[in-house]
Image 1 (cartoon, rainbow, N blue to C red):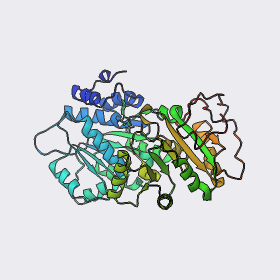
Image 2 (cartoon, rainbow, N blue to C red):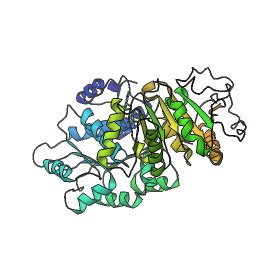
Image 3 (cartoon, rainbow, N blue to C red):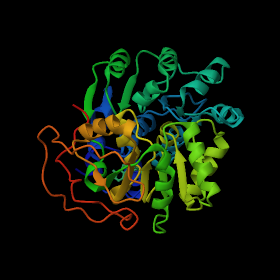
Image 4 (cartoon, helix red, strand yellow):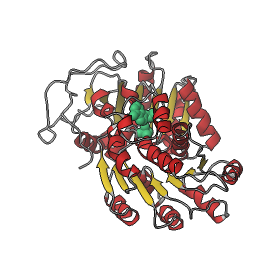
Length: 423
Ligand code: AMP
């Protein structure tokens, strides 16, 4: 399908062409037509699938087609996102896709002064992209009036629930007119999300896409069995490969990420941490330095890395394995973006072996077991077992950029056929 088959306006088609998009992604193909028709949409898709344009383009089209540009603007579309980074990114997409319209977008999030945000609101906004907490603050102070909202979007709803925003979301929803269009996106659809969706959506069209192909097809995924006390040495060993210019390291906790940075720095390895305890300024600086290539290693927690859109990450390291297997998929999706090849290496200590098994079940493949690294766990690795009969011999993989620092012991980390996270 082509973009011009989606009944989008000429202004939006030009904006999409200016972004260099040749054709809609699957979620865009599926979600844009019902969204343009005014239907509610329940989309199961994660970052990297092009979901932002899937809701932004129909919203921009709707608002510019029926826009009252005279008089005071009112907020006609509201997008809620879990994190500041994602809010900024989504708002930036609205601005870029709407460059040839007269619509205005304002972004609202906490951790920074509210003054510029309030000034933006006073100048008038058609679209507001916000995190729930600061939005509720500004509603209370009388700076935000949501009575004119025609389209309400929840982006990464599962992550918002994980972050404890359920009450805030419901409170925000109570300020939005009942008669509205709701577009609801979530990477996963556990029970609490289904309940929320059924309360907020009216007769939705359901659309679902698999995570970006890169997750399975293009990312070299390996695991090193290493005990906790040796993880840092193994990380330093990996980082000794100079070709790795941009490395994203995931730690489970804020404290853990600070500790990794501190110990790397002590050994002369430059790294910065990004997590929720850092000020917004520090997070933005760390991210900008990483994007610009000034910071080679960024150590992040999951929440801080949500929505992180950095191209050309050479390696993702899971310093700790996440307890929820879906989080693993989000993490590794940071490498191999835009169709490029990427590499993800996970460190697995003895107490994390159950987490690894859950991940391998979810992605229906085994990670490549790296046995010849210098900090091997003395405990023998767990056996590679059949995953629901999906095994498919052979991998046809190309060597990872880490080859040399870490070589695989055998070719056992093959792909196992199509991955399904959403059933
Ligand atoms: P998202 O899932 O919305 O975070 O989008 C992930 C990335 O895909 C962003 O860098 C977008 O700019 C890009 N993107 C969105 N739609 C398309 C498209 N149709 N073709 C190519 N890239 C796209």
